Length: 374
Image (cartoon, rainbow, N blue to C red; front, top):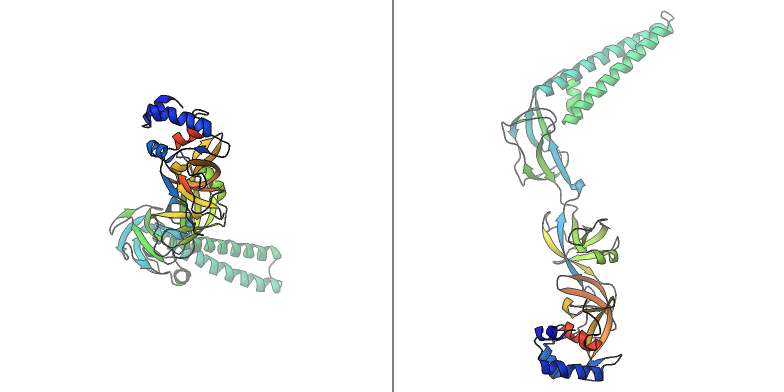
């Protein structure tokens, strides 16, 4: 380390020289000497390691998102005019609740097609039955019976197609039977909720003209919610499918998958499904998620306490036997978020570790310039 770097850290030339000779004389494989006076001059601060709770873990930001199967967009089945709005935003509805009324000539044409195909089917079935009787008596040839059977099948297929077109428009089976038998044709269709949920957005108003497939309103259900958790890409491999995570506030979730791509911020999105205690959460809400560390020897420390050397991580522990010494202890960084990190190493409750002026301590450990700071 250069003398100018020591001066930028606020270290006097005299202390620089004294620390140089002191650390060269006292440096060993196990530790290096730094007196209390030198610590004060360097600005070294210590914290005491405390017992970690079983649920201790790194915290990461997450957003509550709605699974695709929990959202339903109601679209216009045909072009027309909105004649009535029967619900409002944030209203809870159940299956079968009337939502709005749409009027258009295309709906009348679909009903007319069902009426006509139903009439053709009745005539074709009557003709087939008569020809079956005549064939049984030997009055008509087999070819005549086959032609009647084919005509009946064609008529049945036509009616099935007409019913399907109206069903896609939102007409239920009872209405379809009534149209087919009574020929009651109307230009107005009342669209109903296909499942329960909450109306979260209305895209149209009464009197508005819409085209086929235009979105009309949006329904959501909150029985099932997901979390999109942003974690550093290097830590993503630690969180496997099925692992539990904790939402700050009490809810729990289970990891479903991890995205295959890393974002520009060098983070990976973990997707988890909320389990218990999800009711207070709403889609779009941002929360803090805690990914628990299963290892018993995991410790949460400030990120500033970690020094890097030769692709390894270390923390500097104040020696409890030799009061004027530090010991560099190798650790593994399990996870980090913000200014906190989860580490694993040969550490004990009650030990004091340095959390500031790590650059200066590293230089003293390496003999003042043994390696460049990474």
